[in-house]
Amino acid sequence: MTGWIETHRNVVTAWDCDHQGHMNTVKYYEKFDVAGWHMIQRSGATRARLDADGAGCVDVRMELDFVGELKVNDPLLIESGIEKVGKTSFTFRHRMTNVNTGELVARGRCTTVYFDLNKREKTPLPDDIRAGFEAIMIGDED
Image (cartoon, rainbow, N blue to C red):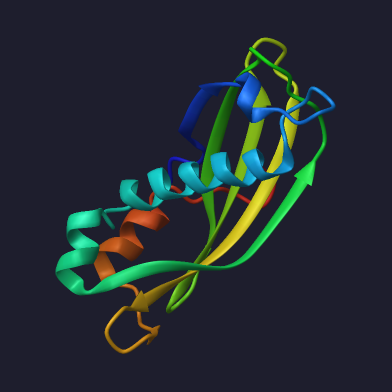
């Protein structure tokens, strides 16, 4: 178990911000989505692997907690980890911090289903991908 891994690092730009001068809500979702795909690929579910298996990963639930604020030029870091692995799905968490201050600015939780793209239904996680997710599990206390 390695726990939290870095999945995204960026700087807030002017086009990330809304009319109030802070990063817009939709950008949090966007950055967490990018981080999620980084983490999914880290498990072994690369684009090539998914294409070969005719599989995909489909988000079925996303929760976000906004606890701080980011403004233009603030550097941000997202770390992610697997909370739970089921038969056909997995749940992961993200935490976003302001790199300059160390302040937690947002938390996210996402449940994703491993999906057969031909049958259009959920399908069991392959054993090697399951093992990849289990290697980056985080504890309840995190």
